[in-house]
Amino acid sequence: MAPLFSGDINLGHMLTIAALACMTVLARCFFFISSKPWVLPGWAQRGLQYAPIAALCAVIAPEIVMSQGQLIHTLQDARLYGLAAGVLYYFTRRGGGHSVLGTIVAGMALYLPLHIGLGW
Image (cartoon, rainbow, N blue to C red; front, side, top):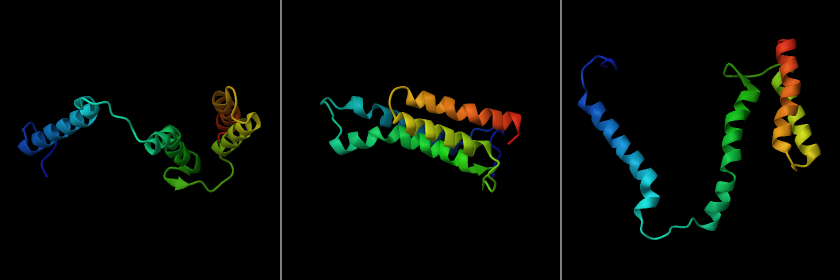
């Protein structure tokens, strides 16, 4: 396999990059190409309402239950207690008001002393 930065121009790599660039432009401009207004079906609009929270869970959940690519094996992990504090705050507020900000603050208020102070 040729090194990536050998100084030579590889035609296959250049064609691949050009094809990916064209596909990206087409995918992003797809909605502007049509002359008619385009509306998502109701089921797709409902599904997109859950996309941000699903993405957030997909990013945060592994960070909470894993360390160095392995599941955590001890209860001396500050992330678990921060999570518990955040969940407790959110459900006591019943999701109203500034519950997301409060959840973050409550979780971090417990996480940081345990992590920095005790080294968990």
